[in-house]
Length: 601
Ligand code: ADP
Image (cartoon, rainbow, N blue to C red; front, side):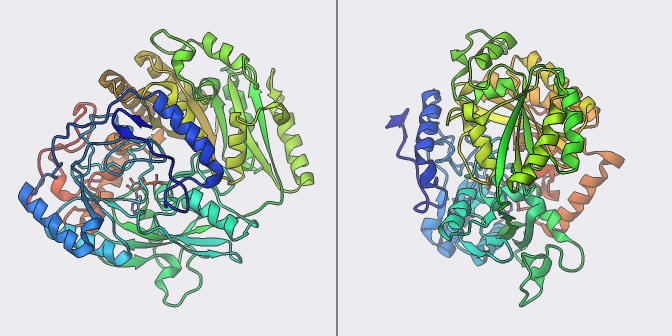
């Protein structure tokens, strides 16, 4: 099969390809792929502007430097990015650019991609980057969709694709319930390894889609849906190559001959791990992760609630249940509009007009589904043997039924491909590929999230819901809110789905995101994570005490990375050489990612 010049081979599988799909999901992945290509109209970008040489180095000097790197790593491990930009899809994603770009294709694009095979080779690349002052951008697997994918923040950076050759599971310890992985190990791959070894007494925690790197997701503070859903909190021990080339091991890893690197995350002295998450201070080459004991039984449940206004009371009901761990996992409260989109059909099947699909159409579609009409759906899971679950579920049931019109959905009434079953698998640590489906809502469907953090309070949920709705209405965008409830806070995740082939839709999506970030900040809410194009704006909202935190971040950056080579601009942290030259992406700056040169100092 081929599409607009984009060859579409069969879906790659594990263990043949480190980033492949496990065989148990192959059929589903094939269907997902068909759905993506059925709605694609965007042709492959054949007219490259030529290799995106980074600012601060002459083209011929840069090309010579790349030739030198080829000699050091082997020619096949250094690829110049001079070919058409192929977007692919989730399982066959590019490592050269953001496959879901909200800017022009050529803005956030790598000049070359290198594939180190060991920590020592990562050091070689770092030494090379310092020598020639070339910006480098590490990715583990580059499936950071919705946050920039594999793209670098600085145009023309050399992407270090760590996962391709560094993809070993170095250890799984069945007694301590821990593992040690390299950057190219996906959630799918770890799940397969646990099964293969017969370790069914241990669970892993997976995000909505399992193709991402465990390291990549964890350092970017991604989440999953079992009680081990806070990945950063569950990691233990890092090996990091610093921007000046030295290697460190954090926590107990600093003690030669230790046997507790994955058991005790802190070691002695300052806890350094924090500065390597959502930053540009180091390249993580190994990471330890804790695994969850199989709880000895589990049961998913789903409740629906009829009205938008039920949100406030519902969140206030959830809070004490969640804090006391009766609601045990990072569960989701989803709006019906997203559930309708999660069927994987284009929005044109429901509505052909402009602007957001009217509520009446969404509710009619929901009424015509096995779950039935509703506005909010809560997906949760109870863990442990039957008698434990029965007690917790009875408390939950009594609490949720305080809302008039609440319905408990009987899973036995739901067909096999209903979204509920995907949530069921994920909350039981079984990676899936279902979540992708709502991207088909628009042609060339792409997404970027707005994800503010708030207390678990009805007033906050209502304020954020109203804020999101206001700006989605302003720009005529369908509104897909979902609340993910942690132990003391919740994230509202709003995915904007847009047609990346349409500059006007991209612009509207970006303006909507910028408006929401600004207004949320005015109300005291900040994002927990963001896309490359919003990093400067979001970092700017964390401005207490005259931007004291960014001044501290910059001090660290200048000390650790004096040449400013590692992922400049990531999370809004610019090295000295770039500062004051207009590299920050703001509303005023528009849709151009580059600044005006770098200093020679
Ligand atoms: P995933 O494959 O899980 O989707 P990515 O590899 O795209 O994750 O990583 C997400 C982001 O985290 C990257 O864009 C990069 O900035 C950062 N990152 C990923 N892996 C590493 C790493 N090993 N060391 C340092 N930063 C990393």
